[in-house]
Every structure is written in structure tokens, then in C-alpha cells.
Image: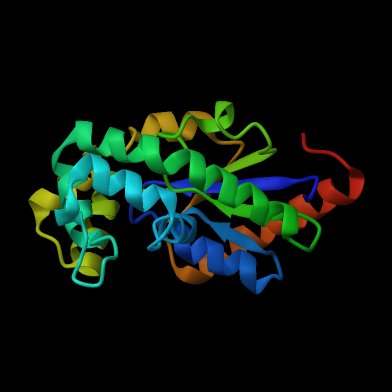
Length: 207
């Protein structure tokens, strides 16, 4: 594992994916919790069997895979269902991400974890050394959700409300990426963090 493992997190539609691409463009490996979440529910994986046992076979599509859009609607409408799903998925996602960080080349590794706050932050991921929060206003999140996902305003509001409050995410942050400007602005901010993290890795420092 890289001595310096950096978590990248933020609320829905904050620009985490764009920030991840900016780190990757600088040659940094990014392990994505969304990729992990898909991998651990592939047919034959224990997590999928647990999900079916808890929620019923209607969560599967015609090919026997998890019907992700239907599951998404269900958990955003029911906090208990969301909590049950997280109990099944989060430990497996943590294991997947740590293995990916261990295999990552380069001076440091990034793990993109959208639900880091909800998953327990540093208490659940004690091997993280820095946490970067991509931050935008709630209004910006709503506008992006409406444009990106084609959802209505009610679902957008519920998606935002289902996540940890913005203040809780900010409380975790060692570093902030304010993403209320252009892609070029975000890429420049990522480049500044990259230079800092490379220097930390070279010096053996995480402060």
C-alpha cells in the first residue's frame, strides 16, 4: 500500500467523478467505491445472495443481476432499507478498496468514497491519511441532479437529504475542493493538491 492514501468524498452531484478524472490525468491511481459496489454484487458474490435474502427476489433483473435503478429508488424512499443495504455492502467495499490501494503504483493512492461520512469516516477507514471533500452548495447539487440524472425536483431533494449533512462532510475534511467553477478550475485545484501530496509522500509526512 502507498504510505499516503487519500480519500476523495463529497455529496451527490458535487463533482467527485470529475475530480477523480483530474487525479488520474496526473498519473494517480483512483480506486472507486462505486466500482467496488458493483463488483461485490456481481452474480455469485455473497453480497448479492444476502441482498436477495433480505429484500426478496424482486431486486433482481431478468438476467439475475441486481436491478440497481429499482434498488436505488427503494433505498432513497426508505431509510431502514438503506441502512440494511449499507450493512451488507460497506464491509465488502472497504475490503475491495484497501486491496486496490495496496496494489496501486505511484507516490500516493486515491480512494473515491462518496458515502465516507455515512460509512463511519476514519473510524471505518483507519488506513486513510488525508480526506479531501469536494464541496458545492445544495442549490448547485440540485441543479446538477436535474440536468445529469433527469430526476424530478422531489427525488433530487430526497437524494440529497438521504446523505449526511454537508456540515458533517466538511468536519471530516483535511483538504477542500470547492467545485463551483469550471472544470478547468477544478483541475487546477486538484493539481495543487497533487503537488502537495507528492511532496508529503516523498518526505514521508502526512500532516
